[in-house]
Image (tube, rainbow, N blue to C red; front, side, top):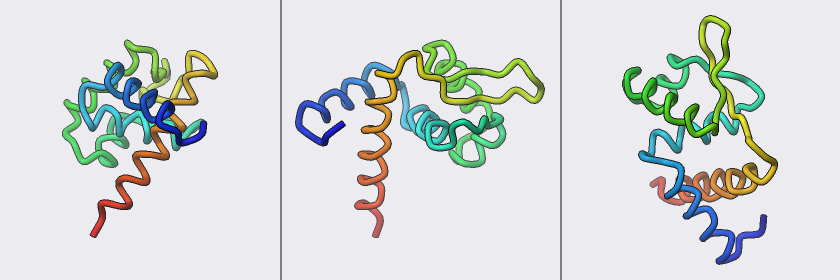
Length: 107
């Protein structure tokens, strides 16, 4: 997806419609970037620097919205799970924009 004003609006809409917090968005970006590798709650908590209880809540929300998938195996692991190929487009743009913004904001 090209970085045009229309594509940025789509990313903004995707963020507003799908995330309640920055850690929730970062969890999805982390799972997107590690696909097809699945992660445990503990692995995500250590990478996101948030308490395990908060990670459990945001993962529950992402599973409920079908943005990620929860394994049935133990220990439970989570992975990015697109409902459709179209879902990958805003995530690709979000990942690119988020990484670029983060790198530009570093001292």
